[in-house]
Each structure stands twice: as C-alpha cells, then as structure tokens.
Length: 286
Length: 193
Image 1 (spheres, chains in turn purple, green):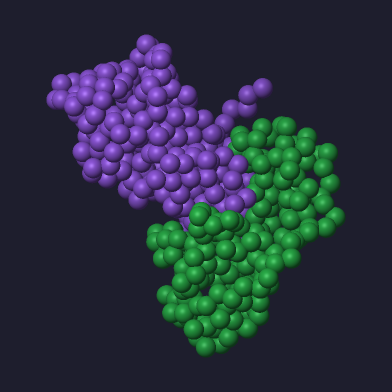
Image 2 (cartoon, rainbow over the protein chains, first blue to last red):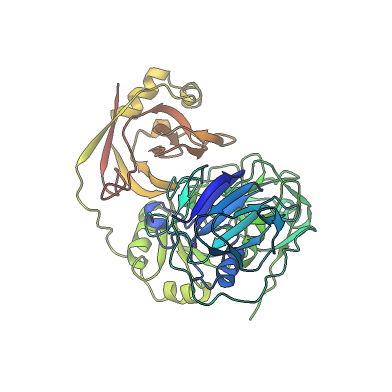
C-alpha cells in the first residue's frame, strides 16, 4: 500500500497492454488507448513495457505516496506538480513519502499515463489488469481513498526524457479502404477521404464518433454481424462514422468502410472533442 | 469464400453462409487467432502470412458441436421495441411473444461482448432490421432480436437490436467456468413469465 488516490479526476482507469487472443470468448483486447504513451512511461521507469499504469482522462488526479517511489507522466498531460511545485513531463521523478502528485488536463491531448516504478499490482482478470469499459472486465475506475499496491521497484530507470506530445493540429490518419467499401456509394468513399471530420463529445474508449457529411450506402440490406478490430471505421445507418477504440465490441453489424492502420490508432486516444480528423489512403510499403 | 484485406493487422474470410464460416473457423482457429461472425471469419496477424495460411487450408468437412442440454431462459416481455417489432413483422404483440417462445433457438457463436451469444433457428417471422441508430445504453438482461438472430445483453452496453423483453439470468460471470452461460451448440428456449 504505497499510493493513495486523493482525487481520481474526471476518470482514472488502470490499463496495461490488454487481453489479446480472447476474441472467440467475446472479449476484446482493451488495454491502454495510447499504447505508445504507456510504453514510454514504463520505459522511463525501467518497467516491463506491459506494466499497469493509470490512464487519466482530462485532469484532476491527485495521488499521495506512503513510501518514496519514482513516478512518471506521459501522454496528453497538462500541469504536473509535486506538493504544488512544477514537475517534469516525460521524466522519472522521485515522489517522497507523504508528497502529493497532481496531474492537470492538457489542451494538446486527452489522456495522460501516470506510471510508478514497479507498476500497479491490482488483481488480474482473464490475464490482464486493464479495465474494459464495455465488457465490464478488470478493476473499477479509481475512487477517492483507493490504496494502490505497487510491484518491486525497477533497478534501472531510463534517463532519457520523452518529448512533450505535440499533437495540436489536425489529425491525419492513414486508412486501408474496405472491407465493406462496396456497401457505400463511390461518393461516400471519396467523402470519407476528402472531408474534415470532427470528434464528437460522445466519444469514448469504445469508439470515437465523428461528425461531418453523411456517408451514403449503395445497398440498404443488413450486414450480418462480423468481427471488427481497433481502428475499424463503422458507419451507422444514419451515415455517421465511428472509429472503434480499445474497448470495441468483438463483432458489429454496421459495415466497415475502412480501417485505420494500427499504429495510427494511438493518436485517437488524444483526440479532444472538436478536433479535426482527416483520413488518407495508406501508402503501400514493401 | 472471398478473402478480403482488413486493415494492416487482419484478414476477413467472407462466406456465403454461417455453415461455411463455421467450417473455415473449425479449420483455422488452431493455427491463427480467429473470430467467427455470422458469415465471416476474422483472422488476426500479418496479412501476408495469413493469406498463405488460408491458401494452404481447406474448410473442415464437419463442424462438430458439443452435445449440450437445452436451457430455459425466463423472459418478461416488456421490451421498449416490442411495439416496433409487432409493426415490422405485421404480428400482434402477443404473436411476437408466441413466436419468440414457440421454437427453441441454437447458440451459433459468441461475440459482440463477453457472454453475448448469437442465437439462430428461431421463428423466421421475427426477422427484423436493427434499430436505425444504436442505443447508447441497453440494460443488462435485455432480450433483443435483429436479422435472423436473438440474444441477451449480458451487461449494460450500447446496442442496436430491437428489445422485446428482459431476463434476470446472469449471462456472464468470470467466477464461473465457463464464464458464459450460453455456449455454442446449446439449445435455448425462451419462456414468458
């Protein structure tokens, strides 16, 4: 018992790299939305890349240390303070016993990753400590007074700093068209690639909902439910695209017009509502 | 069967029928991470490697379903879309309930969410489209119909199926082995209460 949650902020979830390979049970991978930021925070602390950390949405997290421990913050964090004094972003910093770490909201991102040396040792469910918000697997969201158990501290933290997240402009994501582009008009596929989309406030870890022109279907029958992945762009019957996130349903009944390349899906974790998203056809690499 | 690229981490086998998809799933699920859909199998991994794997594989001749007992699911038919289902099918509300309870359903495959099973083989008069726009929150235990399927939402989640009622039975419990109440091959009979 070494870290006490004094305030969980808007939403603080425990996330690691999720539950791969359980799709046949109806269980999605889940895990950190911004996997790059989770790996960075663990590298800074000398942790295994899949150690569990806190995924904070917005800001307002306050943690108090009950023993001295190294902490680090990556992702879309705003102000970071220790007992009110500014602390570095993207660097392992010591939090002494009794000190408070506070993480504020950023304008350039949405989710910050707060890691501790040794990682969070919360009980696993189906092999992971991640909270799957759709499936109801893993630990509950952090609440005031929660006491977090930590693993044994890592001997060798990484001394290299992580540069701040520079994601303020429009977001351009590479997509592979299909598998169900033939369910849409040619104009709809063009609109997907040529329009400026805006992140809707109803977006969450299940899916990032986008507003823009309606994408018209070329056929009106129902698609038999089929498996989908993180990054699938489903289009609802009303023609609205939803880019699936880490807690996506394992199967879905809306046709997928295109799929965001896996390495580009991390950026969606930081897509603040209102932000502009554009899709561009993936360049084939050999 | 059509093989379709699916982003940079998967391939989709697009089949003519659920039977064909099940045959491919049976042949492939030991060799790659595979998820079954109603007409499709999604394989996860490097698309080039998966493409060669499918090229060298033939669908299984038989899809052995384990023998399972019939299970009764008591349902209170008070769903928010019961009236819409009646209108879409041309049946009365009572006839919708009779159709839903009249024949046993079979668990075809899991998916959508943990403990959610796609049930097939029900009364064909109940084939209705999904809702125009999915609900953000469907309560746990809601019983729905969509297309050729019926199913029970294991927990509160978004959902686009037409809701006809609800049950108190727990569909998913990770403290149980297996965690899902309904497993592939099981016969399910809905009983009005």
